[in-house]
Image 1 (tube, rainbow, N blue to C red):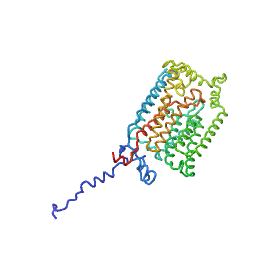
Image 2: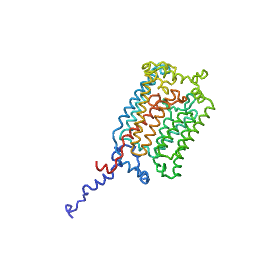
Image 3: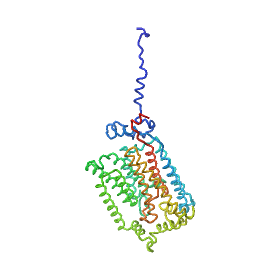
Image 4: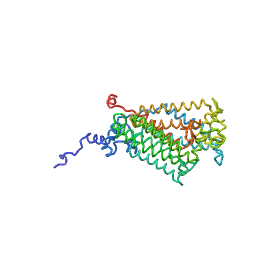
Length: 453
């Protein structure tokens, strides 16, 4: 047979190539994850995820989410708070830095803090980009890794010879030249875990749900929150324990659990927390000193244990309405311990006056409004719970810090977000802000609206 008469084995044009392209289509076409390894944490990637009904539904839902611009108002608020925080932390830390460093380096603390803030904004840049999606944290593997890893680090702090002791409490880990507080990480880990738990089993909570299923979800919530609170109590880190419990109760409340079950939990939590505090008080030590210093601040016999609180009140009072002027604080010259950390708000009031202190509070109120608005407009229940949990955490710390420096509650070592010195704290706080930005960018678009546009 002549070669010229042999039929040519040619592929039909178009069809196989089109089929190949269809096979290569990305699971989430709106997101540029072809080269991003984090896509493996999204629902619907692995075969076992596709078999899971909850994962399958979530995957189909997320295909209709689109990215928009970040919340610029929130960005301006955060930048302003961080800028003022660095300025005031520098002023408050100058004398302490000269006293603490061998070369009398007054910029020691502010330079380190500025580096952490810079790294924090790089984290925000990544978390608010299209290369990251907060739904990646919803993966069971990611959620439990973050939670168990954070719990493990806090447990390591309790081991003698590993955890660093300071002021009667064991709260820090030293890795190389970096000293950090794992409890800060645990707060965010708890928010991530509870967002997944309370969103995944949302049908088991509230009116219309089975009481037995609701009780099971509450038991799971109680085990995790209780374990975190006990770890904080053992350090001891009573302020951290209080914040953990408030975060847990707040997130359970907004998940619409029945009041008949919620109120007894609150009552039991308040009773249990009070019992723990009274137990520490009866043991004596720094907890008893701080409670006595709060109740009897100006008694002559409490001069030493109430020294910090007394000088904080003197700083706030001496500033008057408009302050002594930037850099003109007197209490920061080694009179007020931790003036650059937990008590930086006192120096704000002393140097810039009560009016600036009120302005800082108003800025945090604006932050809270924007944060809860992001939660309200979140594309799904998971995002709503995460945004509300993050906002609630940061605002609770603001309220408790200002209560401490004004002697509204015992001195418990709570930092002021974006102002107080502390690398691990500011990194976690800015990470939380980055997650807020990511949630604010996402909108759910119904398929019928998508086809019209």
